[in-house]
Structures are given as C-alpha cells and as structure tokens.
Image 1 (cartoon, rainbow, N blue to C red):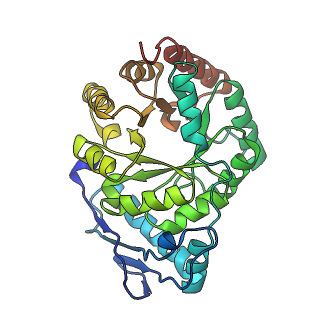
Image 2 (cartoon, rainbow, N blue to C red):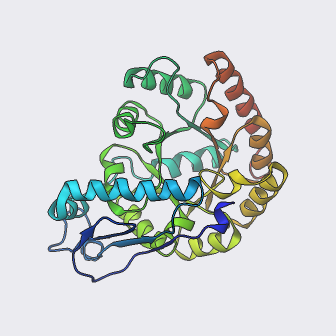
Length: 330
C-alpha cells in the first residue's frame, strides 16, 4: 500500500480549552496568556490542537505514525501544560534565517546546478557524536551543499544530541528529518540549531498551513512533502515555497519506472520561484530529476548504508558529476 492510499485525519483548530491526554486518539491542546517578545502577537494567540484518529495499524507506516504520536504525547506530558506553553511562546527563531533556501537558490542561480543534500549516517563501528561530526565534515568536503539528519527514534536513540552536535559544528544548512506532528517539535528543531524541517502533507492535511506559519515565524525552512498534484496545489495555497518529493513517503514505495515519471510530473508542476527537493538513491536518479528541473536532490541513507568510506566517496562523486552535467535554465 502506498502513502497516497492512507489518509490519517489530522487537523488544527483554534480556541479550545487546555487538555492533555494519551489514548488511541491523541489530542493535544495548549492555551495562550500573553504575547511573546519573540513571536508576533498574532502568532502567539494561535491555539494548536493536533488531532489524529488512526485505525489499528495495518502496515509499517501506520505503526510509525502511531508510535510518533505516543512519543510526542509523552514529551508534552513531561513538559506539563505550562512548560509546553512556555516553549511555544518563547521559542528561539533560527539563528541562520532560511539558510537552506538561500543555499539551494545560490547553487541554482549562481552555479546553474542542482544542489546536493546528503543524509548523514553513523560510521560503522563508532556511535560517538564526534565520529558523526567527522563524517559530516568529510561529506561537506566531498561537496555536500547541506546535510540531513534523521532524528526519529527508529533511526537513532540520540537524535537530539546528534542534531545539535552537527548543527553546532557545520557551516552548511542542516535539515531535520522526522515525522512532525506538533508545533513543539518545531521549537525544538530551532533550539537544536537546525535550519530546515520536513512536513509530510498527507499526515498533517489542513494542519500544514498553521505549521508553515509557525515555521515562517521561527525563520525555519519547511520542506512540504507531497505525493500528488492535489497535495501540491493545497501546499501552494498554504504559501509553501519548498516542496519535497520521494523523501519519506509515497513515491519511495512506487515501482521504479513509475516513480521517476511521477517525480518528473510533480517537478514540472512546481511554479517558478519555488524549490523542489527530490530524494534519490543513485547517480542515475539524480541525473534524471536534475534534468527534469529539480532544485536539489537528497541522497538518502538507503543508498549509503553498508558502504565503506571509499564506496561512499565514489557514489557521492558520481552523484556530483550527474548534477554538474545538467545546467539549470538551459
């Protein structure tokens, strides 16, 4: 089953009472008291209510979403209502305002090429943050324009520590990859130093618009992941400017030939001035989507897991050559 066939119901509502509960139906509320000195009064008065009603898990994806809701609810309970409110009201905006968007735009306009984002994986046999940072430094030296770090508990038990360590030492933008379902995750992202985030539109549905508003307030680049033209048009209505394809959902489950064609069709429908980020696992895929007009490619961890450092370097060089052999605007 593909992501497009599963539509969990998620919504954001305003002006509801404060409540916090844990069950198969996860609902999180918070209320506001006074405007934040860092967030505009209009933003501060927004009451977020993320509600997701899911049937018993039928596949891995639904189980992942259920697990993520449990994790976020536990985090909110640990903070308590006042702690949640404080974190949302006094959130620190990104120190590098829209760094990812600027970086991709510079590669496209100044260098006439598709930007390269590489998903970071821990070196084999060494799980320390220092080894991960060293890996990141090597990836940047190899030509990565930006890095992506997966903080989901299924990928790492120290996602926050790793994201903070990478963000603190890298000069390039760092994107957080995770299942984002509540605004508290956005404030945590900027606090940890990341400059970008992925929002999966088919999970958030109408909540995507309010998440995007908060990302703009926090000066956080939001890549809205879409799987079809209907979702793309909705995201455009929400004033999204960055779109993800085949990163976490949907197209990654399609047959290879169909996947490439769907990616190309979505890229073609993204209007001028907007940015597309497409997940790839090979140099051939990178070349195909770059030729179709992708603004950036994300070299996914699936392509890197199990490779030696030398094999990884060869793959990255091949992807770089594939991207540099296509010239945006020609």
